[in-house]
Length: 362
Image (cartoon, rainbow, N blue to C red):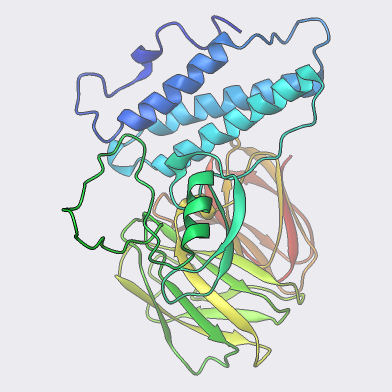
Protein backbone atom coordinates (compact mmCIF):
# COMPACT_ATOMS: atom_id res chain seq x y z
CA UNK A 1 0.00 0.00 0.00
CA UNK A 2 3.04 2.25 -0.14
CA UNK A 3 2.18 5.58 -1.73
CA UNK A 4 -1.53 5.37 -0.95
CA UNK A 5 -1.46 7.31 2.32
CA UNK A 6 1.99 8.63 3.18
CA UNK A 7 4.23 11.07 1.36
CA UNK A 8 3.89 14.41 3.12
CA UNK A 9 1.59 13.55 5.99
CA UNK A 10 2.71 16.64 7.88
CA UNK A 11 1.37 18.91 5.13
CA UNK A 12 -2.17 17.75 6.00
CA UNK A 13 -2.15 19.51 9.34
CA UNK A 14 -3.62 23.01 9.62
CA UNK A 15 -1.91 23.57 12.98
CA UNK A 16 1.65 23.75 11.61
CA UNK A 17 3.41 26.77 13.04
CA UNK A 18 0.71 27.29 15.67
CA UNK A 19 0.37 26.29 19.30
CA UNK A 20 0.11 22.50 19.10
CA UNK A 21 -0.02 21.76 22.82
CA UNK A 22 -3.72 20.79 22.76
CA UNK A 23 -3.46 18.80 19.53
CA UNK A 24 -0.01 17.19 19.59
CA UNK A 25 -1.31 13.86 20.85
CA UNK A 26 -4.11 13.65 18.28
CA UNK A 27 -1.71 14.67 15.50
CA UNK A 28 0.73 11.96 16.56
CA UNK A 29 -2.03 9.32 16.70
CA UNK A 30 -3.34 10.13 13.21
CA UNK A 31 0.15 10.37 11.73
CA UNK A 32 1.15 7.02 13.24
CA UNK A 33 -1.96 5.34 11.86
CA UNK A 34 -1.34 6.87 8.43
CA UNK A 35 2.20 5.55 8.45
CA UNK A 36 0.93 2.09 9.44
CA UNK A 37 -1.39 2.16 6.44
CA UNK A 38 1.39 3.42 4.20
CA UNK A 39 3.76 0.55 4.97
CA UNK A 40 1.15 -2.23 5.16
CA UNK A 41 2.04 -5.08 2.84
CA UNK A 42 -1.49 -5.91 1.65
CA UNK A 43 -2.52 -4.92 -1.87
CA UNK A 44 -6.15 -5.21 -3.08
CA UNK A 45 -4.96 -6.83 -6.31
CA UNK A 46 -2.59 -9.37 -4.84
CA UNK A 47 -3.06 -13.09 -5.33
CA UNK A 48 -5.54 -14.56 -2.85
CA UNK A 49 -7.11 -11.20 -1.95
CA UNK A 50 -10.81 -11.53 -1.13
CA UNK A 51 -13.69 -9.06 -1.00
CA UNK A 52 -13.70 -9.37 2.80
CA UNK A 53 -10.03 -8.38 2.94
CA UNK A 54 -10.62 -5.42 0.64
CA UNK A 55 -13.60 -4.35 2.75
CA UNK A 56 -11.45 -4.27 5.91
CA UNK A 57 -8.82 -2.22 4.09
CA UNK A 58 -11.53 0.20 2.95
CA UNK A 59 -12.75 0.53 6.56
CA UNK A 60 -9.25 1.36 7.73
CA UNK A 61 -8.75 3.96 4.99
CA UNK A 62 -12.16 5.50 5.70
CA UNK A 63 -11.29 5.78 9.40
CA UNK A 64 -8.01 7.54 8.57
CA UNK A 65 -9.76 10.00 6.23
CA UNK A 66 -12.54 10.65 8.76
CA UNK A 67 -10.05 11.29 11.57
CA UNK A 68 -8.23 13.83 9.40
CA UNK A 69 -11.47 15.61 8.51
CA UNK A 70 -12.63 15.72 12.12
CA UNK A 71 -9.29 17.06 13.33
CA UNK A 72 -9.10 19.69 10.60
CA UNK A 73 -12.31 21.41 11.75
CA UNK A 74 -12.87 24.03 14.40
CA UNK A 75 -10.08 23.58 16.95
CA UNK A 76 -12.24 24.87 19.79
CA UNK A 77 -14.89 22.21 19.12
CA UNK A 78 -12.59 19.28 18.37
CA UNK A 79 -14.03 16.01 19.69
CA UNK A 80 -10.72 14.39 20.63
CA UNK A 81 -12.37 11.26 22.02
CA UNK A 82 -14.33 10.91 18.78
CA UNK A 83 -11.12 11.07 16.76
CA UNK A 84 -9.46 8.47 18.99
CA UNK A 85 -12.46 6.20 18.65
CA UNK A 86 -12.41 6.56 14.86
CA UNK A 87 -8.72 5.64 14.81
CA UNK A 88 -9.44 2.65 17.05
CA UNK A 89 -12.03 1.44 14.54
CA UNK A 90 -9.42 1.78 11.81
CA UNK A 91 -6.81 -0.16 13.77
CA UNK A 92 -9.31 -2.92 14.45
CA UNK A 93 -10.04 -3.12 10.72
CA UNK A 94 -6.30 -3.54 10.06
CA UNK A 95 -6.11 -6.23 12.74
CA UNK A 96 -8.99 -8.08 11.06
CA UNK A 97 -7.23 -7.72 7.71
CA UNK A 98 -4.02 -9.21 9.14
CA UNK A 99 -6.01 -12.12 10.61
CA UNK A 100 -7.76 -12.79 7.29
CA UNK A 101 -4.49 -12.74 5.36
CA UNK A 102 -2.80 -15.07 7.89
CA UNK A 103 -5.81 -17.38 8.19
CA UNK A 104 -6.20 -16.70 11.92
CA UNK A 105 -9.49 -16.25 13.85
CA UNK A 106 -10.80 -12.69 13.70
CA UNK A 107 -9.88 -10.63 16.77
CA UNK A 108 -12.54 -9.46 19.20
CA UNK A 109 -13.13 -5.72 19.18
CA UNK A 110 -12.90 -4.30 22.68
CA UNK A 111 -13.75 -0.58 23.13
CA UNK A 112 -11.28 2.04 24.29
CA UNK A 113 -10.56 2.25 28.02
CA UNK A 114 -13.55 3.66 29.88
CA UNK A 115 -11.44 5.87 32.14
CA UNK A 116 -9.26 7.43 29.44
CA UNK A 117 -9.39 6.74 25.70
CA UNK A 118 -5.69 7.57 25.52
CA UNK A 119 -4.96 4.39 27.51
CA UNK A 120 -5.83 2.49 24.34
CA UNK A 121 -7.89 -0.66 23.79
CA UNK A 122 -9.64 -2.14 26.80
CA UNK A 123 -8.37 -5.51 27.96
CA UNK A 124 -11.27 -6.77 30.08
CA UNK A 125 -14.68 -6.05 31.60
CA UNK A 126 -14.83 -5.15 35.30
CA UNK A 127 -17.52 -4.05 37.75
CA UNK A 128 -17.11 -0.47 38.98
CA UNK A 129 -19.29 2.15 40.69
CA UNK A 130 -18.74 5.92 40.58
CA UNK A 131 -18.89 7.82 43.89
CA UNK A 132 -22.45 7.51 45.19
CA UNK A 133 -23.58 5.59 42.11
CA UNK A 134 -24.62 2.06 41.23
CA UNK A 135 -22.17 -0.59 40.06
CA UNK A 136 -21.98 -1.35 36.36
CA UNK A 137 -19.76 -3.31 33.99
CA UNK A 138 -17.16 -1.23 32.14
CA UNK A 139 -14.30 -2.03 29.77
CA UNK A 140 -10.87 -0.94 31.01
CA UNK A 141 -7.25 -1.21 29.94
CA UNK A 142 -4.96 -3.76 31.59
CA UNK A 143 -3.36 -1.18 33.92
CA UNK A 144 -6.72 0.09 35.22
CA UNK A 145 -7.95 -3.50 35.62
CA UNK A 146 -4.98 -4.26 37.90
CA UNK A 147 -5.47 -0.99 39.76
CA UNK A 148 -9.15 -1.69 40.42
CA UNK A 149 -8.40 -5.27 41.46
CA UNK A 150 -5.95 -3.95 44.07
CA UNK A 151 -8.37 -1.28 45.31
CA UNK A 152 -11.95 -1.49 43.94
CA UNK A 153 -13.15 1.57 45.87
CA UNK A 154 -14.00 4.79 43.98
CA UNK A 155 -10.93 6.43 45.51
CA UNK A 156 -8.55 4.30 43.45
CA UNK A 157 -5.73 6.52 42.10
CA UNK A 158 -6.04 7.07 38.39
CA UNK A 159 -3.35 6.17 35.88
CA UNK A 160 -1.43 9.18 34.51
CA UNK A 161 -2.06 9.89 30.84
CA UNK A 162 0.78 8.92 28.49
CA UNK A 163 3.44 11.61 28.41
CA UNK A 164 2.18 13.42 31.49
CA UNK A 165 4.39 14.39 34.43
CA UNK A 166 3.90 12.60 37.72
CA UNK A 167 4.13 14.86 40.77
CA UNK A 168 5.81 13.25 43.74
CA UNK A 169 4.58 13.73 47.31
CA UNK A 170 6.86 14.75 50.18
CA UNK A 171 8.11 11.81 52.24
CA UNK A 172 5.49 10.78 54.79
CA UNK A 173 2.69 12.77 53.13
CA UNK A 174 -0.69 11.08 52.67
CA UNK A 175 -1.74 10.73 49.00
CA UNK A 176 -4.88 12.56 48.02
CA UNK A 177 -7.72 10.28 46.88
CA UNK A 178 -8.58 10.50 43.21
CA UNK A 179 -11.14 8.73 41.09
CA UNK A 180 -9.96 6.60 38.15
CA UNK A 181 -12.15 8.56 35.77
CA UNK A 182 -10.69 11.66 34.14
CA UNK A 183 -14.17 13.11 33.74
CA UNK A 184 -16.74 12.76 36.57
CA UNK A 185 -19.95 11.01 35.55
CA UNK A 186 -22.87 12.56 37.49
CA UNK A 187 -25.51 9.93 38.11
CA UNK A 188 -29.06 9.81 39.48
CA UNK A 189 -30.73 6.54 40.55
CA UNK A 190 -34.25 5.60 41.51
CA UNK A 191 -36.77 2.79 41.92
CA UNK A 192 -40.09 3.03 40.15
CA UNK A 193 -41.86 6.36 39.89
CA UNK A 194 -45.20 7.83 38.98
CA UNK A 195 -43.69 11.20 38.13
CA UNK A 196 -44.28 12.70 41.55
CA UNK A 197 -40.59 13.39 42.22
CA UNK A 198 -38.36 15.79 40.34
CA UNK A 199 -34.79 14.55 39.84
CA UNK A 200 -31.84 16.81 39.07
CA UNK A 201 -28.88 15.63 37.02
CA UNK A 202 -25.75 17.73 37.17
CA UNK A 203 -24.46 18.62 33.74
CA UNK A 204 -20.82 17.69 33.12
CA UNK A 205 -18.07 20.21 32.40
CA UNK A 206 -17.71 18.88 28.84
CA UNK A 207 -20.34 19.71 26.23
CA UNK A 208 -22.23 18.46 24.38
CA UNK A 209 -23.26 15.36 26.32
CA UNK A 210 -26.01 12.76 26.46
CA UNK A 211 -28.03 11.25 29.28
CA UNK A 212 -27.68 7.46 29.35
CA UNK A 213 -30.86 6.09 30.93
CA UNK A 214 -30.82 2.42 31.95
CA UNK A 215 -33.47 0.18 33.50
CA UNK A 216 -32.83 -3.50 34.23
CA UNK A 217 -36.45 -4.61 34.24
CA UNK A 218 -39.02 -4.71 31.48
CA UNK A 219 -41.36 -1.89 32.47
CA UNK A 220 -42.40 0.86 30.09
CA UNK A 221 -40.69 4.09 31.03
CA UNK A 222 -41.24 7.71 30.02
CA UNK A 223 -38.97 10.62 30.97
CA UNK A 224 -40.28 14.18 31.03
CA UNK A 225 -37.93 17.15 31.31
CA UNK A 226 -38.96 20.17 33.36
CA UNK A 227 -38.86 23.80 32.27
CA UNK A 228 -38.69 24.90 28.63
CA UNK A 229 -37.73 22.69 25.77
CA UNK A 230 -34.19 24.12 25.68
CA UNK A 231 -33.27 22.85 22.25
CA UNK A 232 -35.67 19.90 22.20
CA UNK A 233 -38.63 19.26 19.93
CA UNK A 234 -40.55 17.97 22.96
CA UNK A 235 -39.99 17.47 26.68
CA UNK A 236 -41.40 13.91 26.79
CA UNK A 237 -39.35 10.84 25.77
CA UNK A 238 -40.92 7.39 25.49
CA UNK A 239 -37.98 5.10 26.21
CA UNK A 240 -39.70 1.76 25.71
CA UNK A 241 -43.06 0.44 24.64
CA UNK A 242 -42.60 -3.29 24.13
CA UNK A 243 -41.37 -4.39 27.55
CA UNK A 244 -37.66 -4.58 26.59
CA UNK A 245 -34.90 -3.66 29.06
CA UNK A 246 -33.81 -0.09 28.44
CA UNK A 247 -30.52 1.52 27.54
CA UNK A 248 -31.40 4.84 25.95
CA UNK A 249 -29.41 7.96 25.16
CA UNK A 250 -31.09 11.37 25.31
CA UNK A 251 -29.42 14.58 24.10
CA UNK A 252 -28.43 17.15 26.74
CA UNK A 253 -28.23 20.45 24.82
CA UNK A 254 -25.93 23.17 26.08
CA UNK A 255 -27.38 25.57 28.61
CA UNK A 256 -27.96 25.12 32.32
CA UNK A 257 -25.62 23.60 34.91
CA UNK A 258 -28.22 21.00 35.90
CA UNK A 259 -31.26 19.47 34.27
CA UNK A 260 -34.53 18.49 35.97
CA UNK A 261 -36.69 15.55 34.92
CA UNK A 262 -39.41 13.19 36.12
CA UNK A 263 -39.68 9.45 35.54
CA UNK A 264 -42.90 7.56 34.80
CA UNK A 265 -42.35 3.79 35.16
CA UNK A 266 -45.05 1.13 34.88
CA UNK A 267 -43.44 -1.02 37.61
CA UNK A 268 -43.14 0.31 41.17
CA UNK A 269 -39.98 -1.74 41.78
CA UNK A 270 -38.34 -0.85 38.49
CA UNK A 271 -34.79 0.34 39.21
CA UNK A 272 -33.17 2.84 36.89
CA UNK A 273 -30.11 5.08 36.56
CA UNK A 274 -29.54 8.29 34.60
CA UNK A 275 -25.93 9.27 33.88
CA UNK A 276 -24.39 12.17 31.98
CA UNK A 277 -21.92 10.79 29.46
CA UNK A 278 -19.68 12.01 26.61
CA UNK A 279 -20.47 11.52 22.94
CA UNK A 280 -18.35 8.38 22.73
CA UNK A 281 -21.35 6.58 24.28
CA UNK A 282 -23.43 7.30 21.16
CA UNK A 283 -23.46 4.31 18.76
CA UNK A 284 -22.03 5.01 15.31
CA UNK A 285 -23.00 3.45 12.02
CA UNK A 286 -22.58 3.90 8.30
CA UNK A 287 -24.86 1.33 6.67
CA UNK A 288 -27.44 0.07 9.19
CA UNK A 289 -28.34 0.14 12.88
CA UNK A 290 -31.11 -1.40 15.01
CA UNK A 291 -32.68 -0.31 18.28
CA UNK A 292 -35.72 -0.24 20.53
CA UNK A 293 -37.33 2.88 21.96
CA UNK A 294 -35.80 6.35 21.88
CA UNK A 295 -32.08 6.75 21.30
CA UNK A 296 -29.36 8.98 19.81
CA UNK A 297 -27.25 7.63 16.94
CA UNK A 298 -24.30 8.98 14.97
CA UNK A 299 -24.69 8.53 11.21
CA UNK A 300 -21.29 8.37 9.47
CA UNK A 301 -22.48 7.95 5.89
CA UNK A 302 -23.03 10.42 3.08
CA UNK A 303 -26.18 12.40 2.19
CA UNK A 304 -28.64 10.29 0.23
CA UNK A 305 -31.66 8.00 0.45
CA UNK A 306 -32.39 6.14 3.68
CA UNK A 307 -34.93 3.65 5.00
CA UNK A 308 -36.63 3.63 8.41
CA UNK A 309 -38.41 0.42 9.46
CA UNK A 310 -40.63 0.43 12.53
CA UNK A 311 -42.68 -2.27 14.26
CA UNK A 312 -43.68 -0.54 17.49
CA UNK A 313 -46.83 1.20 18.69
CA UNK A 314 -47.60 4.88 18.32
CA UNK A 315 -45.57 7.29 16.17
CA UNK A 316 -41.85 7.17 15.37
CA UNK A 317 -39.83 10.28 14.54
CA UNK A 318 -36.29 10.71 13.24
CA UNK A 319 -34.87 14.14 14.15
CA UNK A 320 -31.59 15.68 13.01
CA UNK A 321 -29.57 17.40 15.74
CA UNK A 322 -27.05 20.19 15.31
CA UNK A 323 -23.47 20.04 16.58
CA UNK A 324 -24.69 21.12 20.04
CA UNK A 325 -27.24 18.24 20.11
CA UNK A 326 -30.11 20.72 19.88
CA UNK A 327 -33.12 19.90 17.72
CA UNK A 328 -32.65 20.98 14.12
CA UNK A 329 -35.32 19.40 11.89
CA UNK A 330 -37.60 16.34 11.70
CA UNK A 331 -36.27 14.12 8.91
CA UNK A 332 -39.16 11.66 8.79
CA UNK A 333 -42.01 10.30 10.92
CA UNK A 334 -44.77 7.73 10.65
CA UNK A 335 -46.51 4.68 12.04
CA UNK A 336 -45.42 1.04 11.88
CA UNK A 337 -44.05 0.10 8.48
CA UNK A 338 -41.28 1.14 6.11
CA UNK A 339 -40.51 4.80 5.42
CA UNK A 340 -38.05 6.21 2.87
CA UNK A 341 -36.34 9.57 3.43
CA UNK A 342 -33.21 11.56 2.61
CA UNK A 343 -30.24 11.61 4.98
CA UNK A 344 -29.13 15.26 5.32
CA UNK A 345 -25.59 14.03 5.92
CA UNK A 346 -23.26 12.92 8.67
CA UNK A 347 -24.18 13.89 12.19
CA UNK A 348 -26.20 13.07 15.29
CA UNK A 349 -29.83 11.98 15.02
CA UNK A 350 -32.53 11.44 17.63
CA UNK A 351 -34.87 8.47 17.26
CA UNK A 352 -38.10 9.00 19.20
CA UNK A 353 -40.16 5.83 19.37
CA UNK A 354 -41.79 3.30 21.68
CA UNK A 355 -40.80 0.11 19.86
CA UNK A 356 -38.29 -1.69 17.65
CA UNK A 357 -36.79 0.11 14.65
CA UNK A 358 -33.94 0.00 12.15
CA UNK A 359 -32.21 2.70 10.13
CA UNK A 360 -30.21 2.14 6.97
CA UNK A 361 -28.73 3.84 3.96
CA UNK A 362 -30.70 2.75 0.90
